[in-house]
Amino acid sequence: MLEQIIFLVFVNFSYEQIKYDTGLTLVYDYIHDSFNCQNGYSKSAIIQFSGTFQNIPQVFLYHEKYDWMPAELQYTLSITTITTVSFTITTSCSKNRVYRNQLRWCALDDQRIEVLNNFDMVNPDDKTFSIKNPNAQFGFVTFTSIHYTGPIDFTLSITQITTNSVTVGITKIDGKFSNLKQIGYQVVVGVEEAFINLGLKSPTGAFSSDVLPIQINRWFVIPLQGLNYNNADNIRMQTNFTNTASTKQYNYASWNSIQTPNRHSQIWVAYQFTNSYKALECFSIRTSRKQIIDLSIVPKIYLELVSLNQIYTTVGNYNYLVNKSIMPLYMIIQSTCPNGKKIKADFNKCNSCSISKFYSFTYNCFNQMNYVGFFPKFKQAFQQYNQFKINLQASSVEIIQVLYDQQITEQTIVKLEIVDL
Ligand SMILES: *[C@@H]1O[C@H](CO)[C@@H](O)[C@H](O)[C@H]1NC(C)=O
Ligand SMILES: *[C@@H]1O[C@H](CO)[C@@H](O)[C@H](O)[C@H]1NC(C)=O
Image (cartoon, rainbow, N blue to C red; front, side):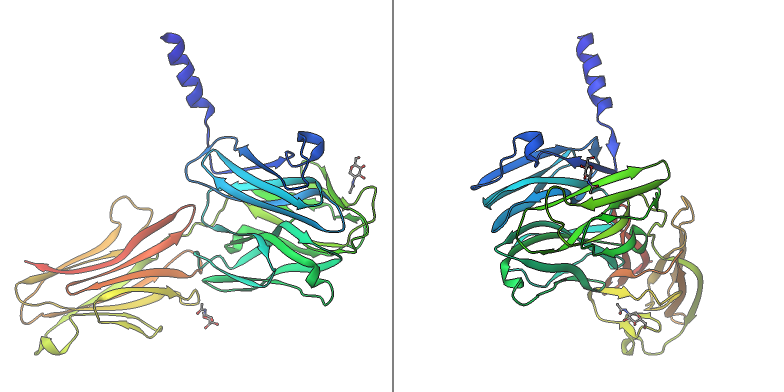
């Protein structure tokens, strides 16, 4: 019995809670794990995280070393399952042989970054993806799989990014594009702080990077984005790193074969953030009460987002994205206050306070004071898009802010109700 208890305690301690993780997997390299990827061979491997995530993380990867055959090569690769303790990569080779794909992967439980997958896209073309986080206005593309039938020359890149979508374009070079039958990639988008992008490199021979100062709390990622391959010899590329305590440098080149001109980026990707996305806080509020002779001619509740030309007076649920150029944000909320009722209103004042979180008001209604107005002003620590869900009912209005921080949360910033006395 005592032994069992000790065992349980041990098991508990070995599952450390993690928020990010990274590794290099060699299981898709013939040298390391009898990986014989040809003639329809397929392999699924489970890669364990070093601890347990609280939520299912997002995972992206890039090729650190690869060795593929001419003339026609077809392989697929996808992340098929992600759990809180592991993820699964499945790859298969139907045409010719992949000798090696050494994959560097990064896993992150944070909504300031969003990973979108487009694995094994047959008939490659430009493609637009929906994004959830309106503040994810930056990003990069990382190659995952390919099918070619001859010489190829392509580059994948983000061609447009908006508050709700990202478009990935692929260059289409006459006489070469038709040899590209399938391409797979992931798009990683994130907030401004997420990436330090050192730019696209397009070496035509062996490449040596600059000596780069290490950025704390960031992974160094070198996603492949394009190849100019004459299809004469194997594509063999490998990355060797030279690290010191404060710097990183890498060489990217072939071995025992001609150099394949390629396009890859150098990006420092944050796995810890300093900017936290928090709800708008009301820093000033004015109120007014007055008499309206005929209450039936005014809207029961009136909400205006000032200087945005957004006015809500009709019952319904609405989504609205406040442009990041609007700061501070002014609102006008006016409510009828019929006899026998009272108005209760709360405005989010302080996200980090445990008491006095709100400016709270209660007004009893009577004939000489049957119309109440609130004129709040809101601010936040830095410019960002603010996503609202507005719920206007016959006798209430609520503004809920949707926040993409380490987790997605929803927080009420305005609530007004007409209630019985
Ligand atoms: C990487 O290191 C190996 C072993 O030292 C060497 O054979 C190879 O040429 C190096 N490749 C590059 C791109 O530096
Ligand atoms: C935000 O406002 C700027 C400046 O007026 C404008 O250029 C931009 O298109 C707006 N963004 C959105 C998403 O509406």
